[in-house]
Image 1 (spheres, rainbow, N blue to C red):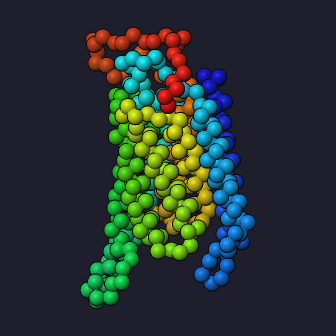
Image 2 (cartoon, one colour):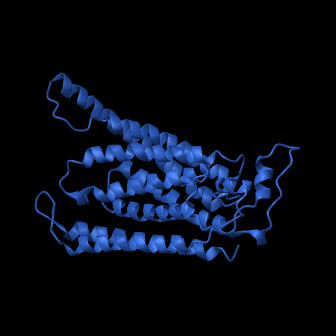
Image 3 (cartoon, one colour):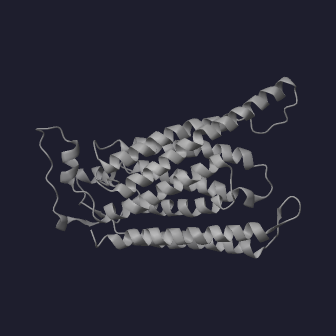
Length: 314
């Protein structure tokens, strides 16, 4: 396991450093790149240019880390498609469990805030309709939908942490990871609906990028249990989720949005903490069969470690 540790360290260190730099530049941009009563952006502002460069650098650095990430798999055989849903097995790893619990409870904490805000907007919408003064805008429906989906995401994230800490039956991880992905879809729709009319792109583009990165990360997370594994791409998306979320948090969004951003970047850190280790030193097929095969059923023979080879298709 000691041979595998540096890659996890590389992912965590580089991701957090890039995220901190990007967030600092975003704060600089907000302090210097806007002017006037309406906060219009200054064309060609130095801080805006630097922020774009930092984000591009983050894309490139994380892509290089993903390209160099070793992925050890058994030779192509029946067992090949079954190993991916064990990629987040973290038996006894209290750090992974703690991170997933923090992520889950941040999602849960956002539920009453988002639902209350959406319900208030819905009531205002009903009053405006009755008085025939409605001129368009947010009617609160997407906010309430996002709150319900965030509640489902709470159960999904909590179950991911539990199944990783104490693995049970295989094949359920994809369903649980799909729940926060669905929450990301609703969140993206609501965010774009509320911000699309804003003429200042810098006001909402960082938030949209963070939501999209998190949603795609959860989709790839679910794919690890559905024979559609793209582990290197998922690591890249997890890193970009952290970077973009920190940039969005630097803009000091509302409380509900802040909790959702914290939830997804903490989950991304959990993925960066666990996935590189299991990709380099995957749980053996024998361990998998002991977890999932009924008592008395013949188990597949474990493939010797020396026969494992580098997978060039991920």
